[in-house]
Length: 251
Picture 1: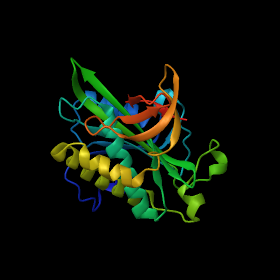
Picture 2 (picture 1 turned 60 degrees about the vertical axis):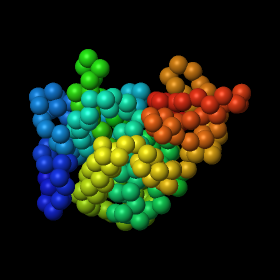
Picture 3 (picture 1 turned 45 degrees about the horizontal axis):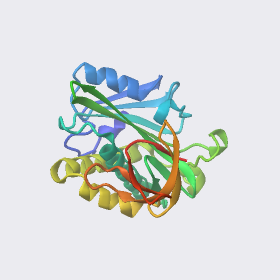
Picture 4 (picture 1 turned 90 degrees about the horizontal axis):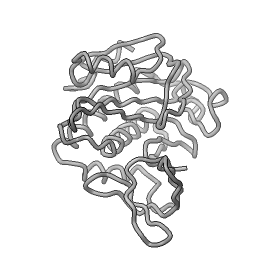
């Protein structure tokens, strides 16, 4: 994956790249590097992960042929809300997959990229916060590229299965970094509103009745939009009350 740096043409992301044949978790490696002072934009790649995880410590099955990467960001001090970063990173990931594969993927709130009803990619954002200041943010990205969904958990999709084409993971990684940088700069310069507008174009969650597991309880309602200040999901419950959901699982 070191070929990613060739003709990448980014200003920030990918200036330093770390590659591993196998590791426990690229997010864990990226966290150690960030704590050691690695500059913003550093990226960790691995051919395989033995302890990959998704949200709420759920196991993410990794096999050779997938794309597994983590990006180190150092956002403004006030940006300690992960919701906005889930939005911008899911927008970037969906746009990159569409550009490289031409597959009609879409975003399922909060962080899944879906193709024909199956999960093809996911994002895990983890922040290190000290004294209410965000020291750094790690964006972990996993994409099922050139592998068969027969060997993945039920409900999975892969780019290979959906198109019959084997894709260059290097080119996909480049496009993800380009799109992620574009959305990150936009977020820092103009705030969350333009990111939300693009997210609406790429998502099919709004207008759907969904059940949300917040980790404490299960709540059901209609997804009616996103909060324009925080990026939180606006869920209209059966009582008519609209609740802001910052972090949860759409089940």
